[in-house]
Amino acid sequence: MSPSTASLIETEHRLGAHNYKPLDVVLSRGEGVHVWDVDGNRYLDCLSAYSAVNQGHCHPKILAAMVEQAQKLTLTSRAFRNDQLAHFYEEIAALTGSHKVLPMNSGAEAVETAVKAVRKWGYEVKGVPEGQAEIIVCANNFHGRTMGIVGFSTDPDARVGFGPFAPGFRHVPFGDIDAFRNVITENTVAFLIEPIQGEAGVLIPPVGYFTSVRELCTQHGITLILDEIQTGLGRTGKLLAEEHEGIEADVTLVGKALSGGFYPVSAVLSNSEVLGVLKPGQHGSTFGGNPLACAIARAALKVLVEEDMIGNSARMGERFQAGLKGIRSNIIKDVRGRGLMLAVELDPAAGGARKYCEALKERGILAKDTHGDTIRIAPPLVITGDQVDWALEQFEAVLRT
Ligand SMILES: *Cc1c(COP(=O)(O)O)cnc(C)c1O
Image 1 (spheres, rainbow, N blue to C red):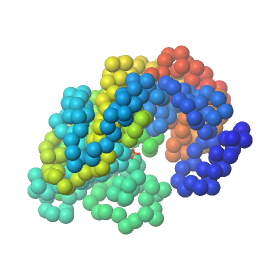
Image 2: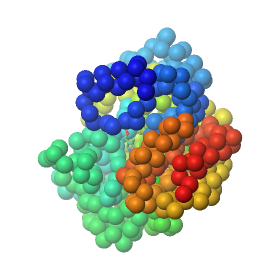
Image 3: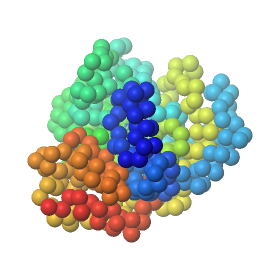
Image 4: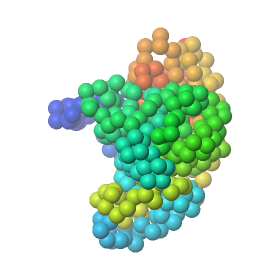
């Protein structure tokens, strides 16, 4: 480690709260699938900022849109209108087939917004008695870090010591349709779920699960809220992961790659009347829907489609997954994923994924361990076949036994 790297890490450690434990690499530049550290070493980014950088680092067209808009107007607040918001609404609604849009900033804010809206919808439209609305969520969910959200997490790290929490949430195991059916009551207003559980280790539910979830939600007047903040916008080889299941959510949450990594932009997309219950003064955000965010998001969506990043995600994901499955290793327990949302689960006897991520770093790959034994692999969607093959050589060198 160079003296400048060591010094930056020491300062971070001394002055910063220790709520993260990053790999010891200090990055100063990015372009496409690559990032460079302060000493000039190049890495292939296999995390993409948790899928916020699907379009690749510093995409020139998103950058140009950002700079152009920043020179004109950045923030008006929603007390006044701006000339970017309507265009953003039109373009994201057309792309996703949504009827209503509510822009926020972080993913967690989009989740909180959906929870608020769906409770109010429950009281005003579904007729649930005041204060009785129930939202069903999954065990091992990840929806963000705010108080409301960690209150319905089942991860002890996320919630222990932070209570008391808001009531009104019921838990079911992910992928278990009978458990879901059994927990429904007449006060159930929504089912909030990730199409693929990302932070839990890239867990894909059984075939047919979401078809049955959709049927039960329709039958019982339950709003199906899909959190596509990580799975959405091309990550799984489709625009939205719901397309793999052949269903449509009532409310879809997007964030992360909605800005291509330039700025925090999230949105609640609604097909039903859920967002219609919010009246002036009942919800908002100073930065939500600002012209800079809208201009950036418009460019981020445009390049995603125009440059066929979604198709590339499907093709390169298949190549990457097949290559990983071909590695001869008795420490690999499972390889799974969809599109470029991939995971290698190691045998617990291998001693945890972190040390393999450290070894990959030495070979020029940045990947993140999750939940102890799983290496998550999610490169930018602009990755080429040659880059996938090079990455596979590095994984093979580190994981082969
Ligand atoms: C990252 C993430 C969030 C939270 O987004 P933030 O922008 O970090 O608040 C919510 N849900 C899912 C599925 C995520 O991956």
